[in-house]
Length: 313
Length: 313
Image (cartoon, rainbow over all chains, first blue to last red; front, side, top):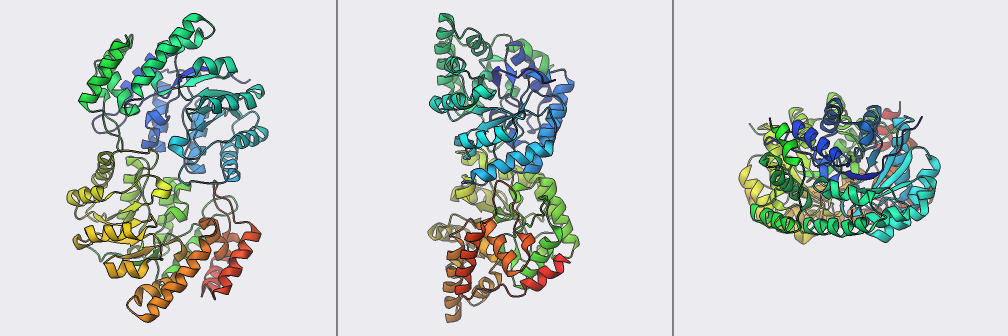
């Protein structure tokens, strides 16, 4: 029996690191639980999670720890993409065995300008190597970072070959007409299209999409989830404008360190700021400016301080 | 006592795969030995080796097998770069312990537009984690693929911080003035600059560079090595024109499958053609056209057929 598909608002959960750059398991679990308390699902090991700055072994160990801590797997869509078929298959099989709702899979992102046939073979080979009926793959289109696109033709071929396994996509091209075209082409066949941020959230739902997976859901999960719930109402429309304003502030800064700066600030927990190189922490002056802008919008992170106080103990 | 630095002509050794896409160890060792017989060093696990299409475990296992087969480590510069500090450090430490001459290290290539400070911290952290006096790092500048550059300022900072460990670079920007500027800035301090292909080989040597690491050295190693040896002579200049013609033919095709097609053809060993997705094999019509052009130049691969016959047994 197939589980219900994961939908709504998900956060590519930022990964806290200790001063020695090892994953801070306690704070990671606390952040996952806080996000769940705000009705936000967990796209752990996404771009904003610095997943590619961790080895496959580190990601698999961290996922096991989080699952052992009782974080529900049916609210999880871990990133499992890699440049090699072997690593992508290994990590995807591991996550699927743990019972996650689906996996978010980058295309192989080292070689540029590769043919669609090669991408088809890559995903095809990974699905076959995982060899698990429960596998649900969400294709990850993020050309500004991966520089390798998930095209309509590729989706069509993969859905035809693996109708049960190819479950949807995250579209991080930041181009609503592109996302809409994916929904129009494939949603009727059960392909769940998540927008890569919350700006077109109501449009996404109205068009038949599945929701959004957004970096800023790390700090603003409750209001984004509320927008999702109230999408058909005037309240929802007002919320959409406000969450877009918050997103607008964050887009003025380098996203990953800026998210961690916010969590450190609103959670009163300075241990949140480290990032793994090649990223660099937000400078204090920039951080203070960002917080001032967020405060001006009436932005808060309800319950975060208590959640982090538990983790810091 | 530090070993003599590796110099001259190196090949980013193409990795043969079986039909099931596992590395074909026998053919890989045979190709390594053939390249050595042609005076060509071994930059195994480079871009043209499909290194990023293999997991870290696969690369480490293959390196151990090759070393165990008696391929000399002082003629090897394996690629060990990765998007994560943990994987880059682990693979680099492993290769260094095996006694390789140096490691060719990509910058972390997932995030784009990262600050120089973050790249400095990345390489710095890897050098410190390896913690081995024998480590020699060659920085790998290949912006058309990695999309993350190794800048002059970054080289300067790394050389100052780790004068013994930072040994040189491979410049695959395919822009001779850029390579020359690196030689002019750093060669006097013992920084060995390899051109990313053979086209500017004589210019590289005359300017004080260390040679070249070139995809086409997989098929044309002997004549490129001879150009290196005879760089100061009229014969050398003539050879340079001819090896450039061969390179010119190959640049008309997708390089990695095209190299494998050539080895299959001239080595009379069809088992050489498979590539890992997202790459795709050279189509027969294109392959035949390419071979016709190479034949017209009088191109041969001396001794390859015998070398491959041994591997195929």
